[in-house]
Image 1 (cartoon, rainbow, N blue to C red):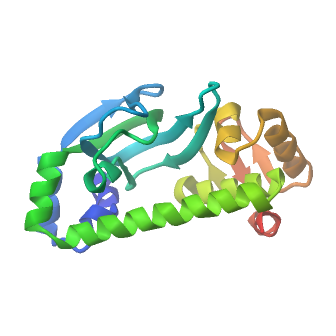
Image 2: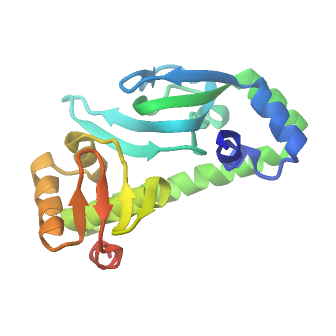
Amino acid sequence: MEDDIVLSAPMFAGLDPAASAALIESMKTLDVARGDVIFHEGEPGDRLYVVRSGKIKLGRRSNDGRENLLAVLGPGEMFGELSLFDPGPRTATATVVADTTLLELGHQDLVAWLDAQPTVAQHLLQALARRLRRTNEALADLVFSDVPGRVAKALLDLSTRFGEEVDEGIRVAHDLTQEELAQLVGASRETVNKALADFAARGWVRREGRAVVLLDADRLERRAR
């Protein structure tokens, strides 16, 4: 099942089963625990990672110590591929949010693989384009959307990747602390908690520690617009 999830990563798109199996076999498996750092912002980048299970957060830290959470990645998603097309320092810090298993592929091994399977490069570029599009949308949200709207949108986005249907709606085990959720939205923890409390009072969500149950996704969708 895990490899079925891994095969949804862009680098495997278009490959025949034998080629996909060979690529997975060539990748190193890493088991990492919550709080572990895979790489730091500014370090040289020389490898790509695919999430087999668990969650990874990508964040950047400002000069005054504040952290901005850029993305939360789950099974089937990859990170670190930017260094393949633009060798240089890592642009973010990758930290484990929940116990995770990763597949790791070194830069030289990946280049050799792309030489043999050139169509993979196209899929990797498409993945980078999608990430750039999400970044542009996030920047627009910071300018044009209020905090409750951004919180609603973040919950819906997390639900598409980590949500599980339950009797009452969709349970989203995001595994984020209150501070991390606030960093993802780009607001203070107090403001985000106020928005979540308002959603709960309206019957749209129910909070469960590091999880939330979306009770009325339609209302959240309208609030996110």
